[in-house]
Image (cartoon, rainbow, N blue to C red; front, side):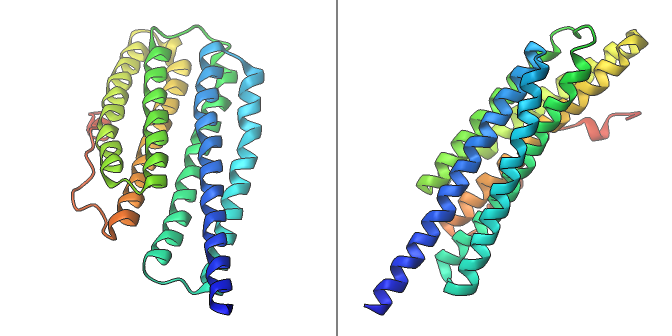
Length: 235
């Protein structure tokens, strides 16, 4: 009976941290969607709500890490259970960073709402954030179902986000060169687009953890990357 009780308590602990991961993931999905909405509609009040909501995301990461540390200390998990706990810690860290990027997007809404729109840059950012949000949803679904194939598909889709970022980066450079009055807005839009591209990288990291959790092995192939801006002359 004692062994059964310990096993049951262990399962309850594991279920608890996984439930918190899914709750954190839902909050981060909301942050991405609402951060973009605040930018698109120039809604400073909504932007402030997104920034304030990041506190809950940060708190969940702390709670998850404390819970994971407690499980390791008290339950001494081995094999797949240890993989699960380590994956939970890494996934919560990636989710927290994505939440920070969404918060920063909302923070720049206050500046951008005061200047004239720059071409269809917001439209491109909308497509980028929707792509990242869909990747995150699928990465979390892959986590729930231990679906390595779906996780691999998420990793492959990060190339699309990189390509959208590359196109917007070059477009913003053109606008800045054409008219110096565009520089302030373009710089803020660039930071937002780069943050969104980094969101995709963190979602990719989550998908890699899912593959590790499902198979016991890290992905063999290098991540597909299409961000070429680091090699752009003069940047």
